[in-house]
Length: 130
Ligand SMILES: [Zn+2]
Image (cartoon, rainbow, N blue to C red):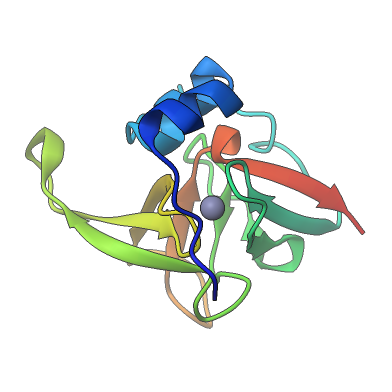
């Protein structure tokens, strides 16, 4: 996989302020505010920064947590994880493998078969209908 490397200034020039805040400054959108939270179309979810494939609609489920949730990533190397100890919690941060965009967090309380819940900001993704 070819990495996409840009400076914060380059990303700031390309992205909307909201997307920059979420993806490059590890922000979190308000729960139930995202366009993909209550959204059930068939297709792919790509990175809002680099266009890399992140998630597929077939792995999306209704978690009622206020953000889009997936129990599996699109490819085994679509995203990677970083231990996040901010806000007094120990969480696994999820980032785009291509451009290191912050996407959200993954929790060990998802449905079968993985038992995982990727809790992802809508603003970090762009949906592509199939
Ligand atoms: Zn990316």
